[in-house]
Image 1 (cartoon, each protein chain N blue to C red):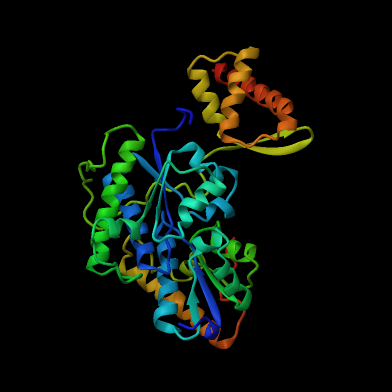
Image 2 (cartoon, rainbow over the protein chains, first blue to last red):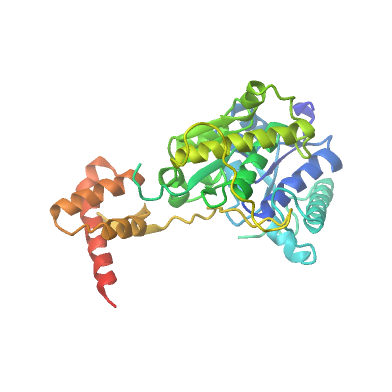
Length: 142
Length: 241
């Protein structure tokens, strides 16, 4: 994908210990690979930890969508620390609160409910991006 | 490293979401944490070294840590060393794939068969390194523990240190509030060893505290006195029924 055409950088958290982290990653893949492949670019959070120049440049040129799996909000914090602009800050827990029937389970492999939650989250972000909104509903998790 | 917390090995995976090798790194780490060495390992998300608190940054000081990276950027290894402490050992998936003559993993979201094989090989190597770090077994051959009774796919949450399981104590030193990690663990460990409260004991106590905490050289005396007082209070509290 040509980075110049990227309109939004998507940064999921690197959560490894809880199902919500896996939902965050699955939602990012859904958004970048399936829903809006032409206008999004996935960036690994680990690169921001080390201050990777290419990743920081991308963030300098494009607004970011951050998707976090826990209250630590690592993705959002790291994008801000890297000089990027968080256009959409999403917390999986907040989306789950609105979709309690979709309880995610499994870390290496999500259950069906978790996969649906990721899909719902990705769709909400995609629609929000289409409307040019700066936040998505339920992005106030603290 | 002190003998304080060596019973658990920390595993830090890069989780590189952009590459299939990052997925291999993450899934291999989970396999070790969940199935191969669940009692011997603990993990933390790499970004918490920056986004978390002092307790998170002390992770690699408190646990002998093995990093698993997907590619040559080695974000997990370099990040752990930069923000926490030097890892005990490091693995890089693409190097292991080449070394073992495996096919290239593909599919960052859903690994292909080569990727699944790479997960198996990486997890076995990682488990062997865990054994080495704990001094359980020499050599690189993985020892697989009895699988748990949980049915396939019924994963527990792995031993995750997010939000940090490491205690952080706030002390007022020279008029400033400072955070010191692991004081209760250190106090308990040293008290169990019979450490007293005289001048020599205070010196030994402070040397252990400095392993896990950065102490400004110009403020060493103040820190030492504050830690000594805190330890005395701890011992007093322990005596009280």
